[in-house]
Amino acid sequence: MSYKIGIMGATGAVGREIIEVLSNRDFPVEELRLYASQRSAGKVMETPFGEITIENADMVDYSELDIAFFAISGSWSKANARKATDAGCYVIDNSSAYRYDDNVPLVVPEINAHAIGDSKLIANPNCTTAIAAIPLYALHKEYGLKKVIISTYQATSGAGAAGMNELINETRNYLEGKEVKNEAFVHPIVFNTIPHIDSFQENDYTREEMKVVWETHKIFEEPDIPISCTCVRIPTLRVHGESIVIETEKPISPASARKLLASVEGVELKDDIENNVYPMPLTATQKCDVEVGRIRQNIVFGDHGLEFFICGDQILKGAALNAVQIAEKLELN
Ligand code: 2RA
Image 1 (cartoon, rainbow, N blue to C red):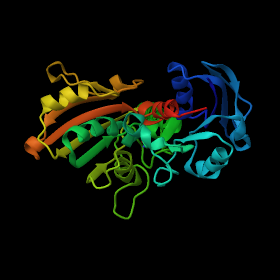
Image 2 (cartoon, protein in one colour; image 1 turned 60 degrees about the vertical axis):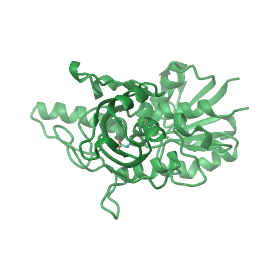
Image 3 (cartoon, helix red, strand yellow; image 1 turned 120 degrees about the vertical axis):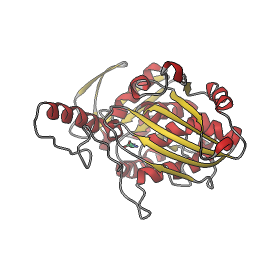
C-alpha cells in the first residue's frame, strides 16, 4: 500500500527536509504534492521523487490526500487542520497550534506512539522538547525523574531558512565591515548569544522555555515532574545543544546511565572525554540520532543526580524526522 502525501510549506527548511526524509526512509509514497504560499505556486521543485510543481496551499482539496504534513504557521494550521481531517486526511502538524489541546495527541514515536489512537490530527512537538525527550524518557523509566533543569544552545534553523540565512549574511557583512541588520532575531546573532526565544510569559520565562515543560509533561504523561528550562539562541546553523541536569528517585551512576543510553533507540552515545569525544553541532548535523555525552555525576544532587550534554539536528529529530516517524505509525487503510 502506498499513500498520497501533501506537504504544506514545502519550500521552507522543514518542508524541504520532510521530502528528503520520506525518500531516505523509503516511505511508501504513491504521489507527492507540494504546497506553499501563492507567491511560490507554479514554481518547480527538484525532489528525489522527480520535479514537482508547487501548488497554492490555500486551494487544497484534502480529499485527494491521505496524509498532509503541515509545516507553515500556527494560525494557518488552526484555519486548515480540521478542514483536512473532516475530508478524511491525516494531518501531522509541526506548529504549536494543537500541542496543548487535550484532544490532540502530541507524539514522539519512540515514547508515546500509543497516544495516536484513532486521532486524525497529530501534533509534532517543538524541537527542543523532542530532542531532550529521547534520553530523558529512558532515564525516567529506569531511575524516575524527580527534577529536570535544562539550558539550551539553539541553532538559527529554529527560525527556519530565514534564521540560517540571517546568520550567514550577518557573518559575511560583519567580516566585510558592513552594517549588520537583524530581522529574524531580536538582536544580531553573529558573534552573539541571545537568551530570548519566542515571547516572554507572565512568569518571565519565554514561551520556548515553557513549551519544554508543557510538552514533556504531556508526552511522558507525567504532569508533575518539576522541569525548568533556559533557552538561548547561538550562532550555529542547524543543531540544538542542551545541557541537562536531573535529580532521580533511584540512585544513578554515570556508568549505569551510559550503559542504558547506549541501548536507547534514537540515541548515539558520544562520551569519551579521554579522546575529546562529546556531542557537538558539527558532528550531529544531518544525523537522525541525538548525540548524548559529557555524562557525569552531578555534584549538587550527588548519587541521585546526573548531568549530560546532548546535540540533536533541529530540522530532523526536532521536526521533519519526528513528523515522518509519526506517519510511519499511522494505521492507514
Ligand atoms: C526555535 N524551537 O528553535 C524553535 C523552533 N521551533 O526557534
